Length: 76
Image (cartoon, rainbow, N blue to C red):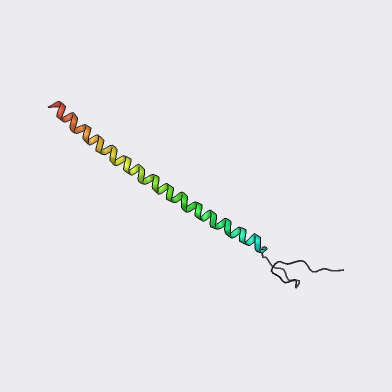
């Protein structure tokens, strides 16, 4: 006895559909959304670290200028 294959999507009319079950499709979408959010979080963290490094560089330059002024005053 021939049985038609079980198809996802609610119909069992014998046609072949390349469709995931609803729960797998939802899980795939959630996984994609999670990956996008994680990537955005990583990008924000990288930008924050870059800004912190820029601030440190500015502070270091200010300290160097201050020390150079002090050395000039001592040499006088």
